Amino acid sequence: MPRKLAHKNGMNSAPHQALRDVRLRIERAAHSVGRSGQDITLIAVSKTFTAAEIMPVLQNGQMEFGENRVQEAAGKWPGLKAKFAGVELHLIGPLQTNKAADAVGLFDAIHTLDRPRIAEAIAREMAKQGRKPRLFVQVNTGDEEQKAGISVAAADHFIEDCRARLALSIEGLMCIPPLSENPERHFQLLADIARRHGLKGLSMGMSGDFELAIKLGATHIRVGSAIFGTR
View 1 (cartoon, one colour):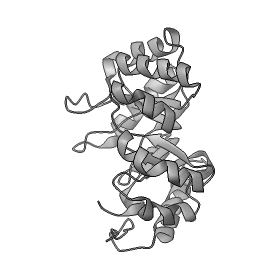
View 2 (view 1 turned 120 degrees about the horizontal axis):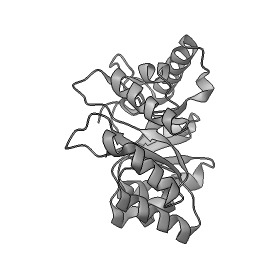
View 3 (view 1 turned 180 degrees about the vertical axis):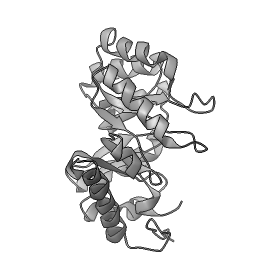
View 4 (view 1 turned 60 degrees about the vertical axis):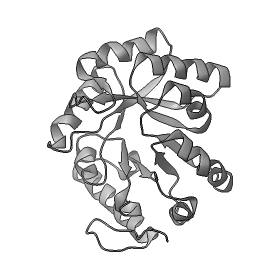
């Protein structure tokens, strides 16, 4: 059976209502700091949800979606993209080098560039396939051993190496703050690193903290449960 959707208060909600609620919250958060909601890209995180469950959200005008796994996305998105022109697919989960070719072929943006080997694999596949997905470097702002992302200490060198040695066009940075900490410090740290490198894109903020992320400069927010409900 399809999972029930939920809005921010945990009540069941139809897809168009949940999506409208999130969009309204984006507008309000942006307006509170003198920004426009139009400057924020809402990525609906559709990982683990079926094509049938995603369809109502697509039908209500959502065009940007995020997936964690290349194989899962490959099983449902080619058909959906064929039906809905203009859909943009974002990889927001860890990427292994043996999936680089599939990722470059399928995704329009990759948010999890986090180590030299994967950067090299992506650069090779982009040249081979003639495709140029937008690239974000994932920074492990909490330096958590179990979490993907380049360390804070290595981030500056890695960004420069991607640009200079591999000629990769880096659009921005991404982070996932530790669950046990206030995300504000992590969002500010990511913004500081981006500023040093002249990067405009900040992929930060999820269902529980996207309004704060917007107030601190997020350009891309990754929202799953507030739109699709709990998994």
